Length: 241
Ligand code: NDP
Image 1 (cartoon, rainbow, N blue to C red):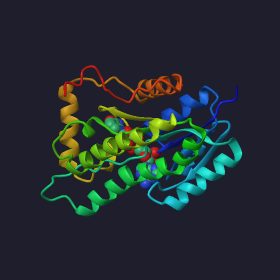
Image 2: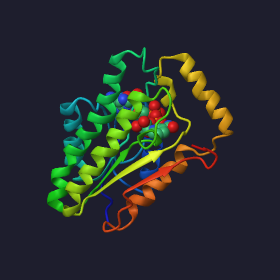
Image 3: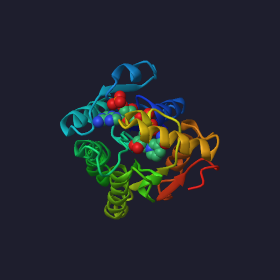
Image 4: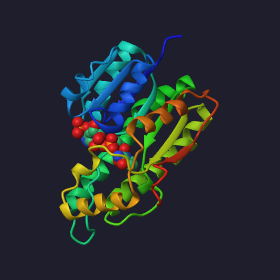
């Protein structure tokens, strides 16, 4: 049976790039979206449309989804993975950083869901996977706005699940712990970055990789449509919070 279209947002680095390689290896046609088109094109994956898309821009995002669907058929899976982490001291962080983070991490995910949900409902099939974080389950220092965004993803996913379950559409939240990617690089406050890296040293070597993480996502997706792992936390064994 031919594999169906998989959409991955934030595919130019980290989890998204690893997801793209893993799903491509198994023969899925892909739509990859992110800001850095060159990085996605360099992956050189077969049956893959790469588009420069800002997920906060609904029109741009929708055009990419419709173009991919006209080539590969309707999307069976979207992984709303694109996100930024701008850690900050609540008392002094620029509110523009809060707004940017909420826009990308929450509204970007909502755009992704809205762009596929009507078709999935009609077909009574499909899967939506939203990447939240352990910071969407528990608080961390200097994470106020990031936590707000990731608790938000968890909340909106639970609502989407209630609305889509009657239509046999699976909606899943994933809450990863710390994994080395480019994510910390977005934070502008160097003291907070140093503290984060010191915390990681106290935890010990964090050996879990983006590849470990993506294998679990593929496993969850490839279960029968009637089986729903609603959410899961995945972290390095040594991460003690
Ligand atoms: P990276 O920084 O490596 O990747 C983030 C991806 O998101 C990049 O491809 C980036 O592409 C894309 N992106 C950012 N803003 C936008 C935008 N407006 N429109 C489209 N794409 C965008 O980080 P990770 O791989 O670690 O993060 C992936 C997800 O996992 C995020 O949602 C993050 O919050 C979450 N997460 C990560 C954890 C970790 O420890 N690594 C832990 C818990 C959750 P580009 O810059 O090219 O636009």
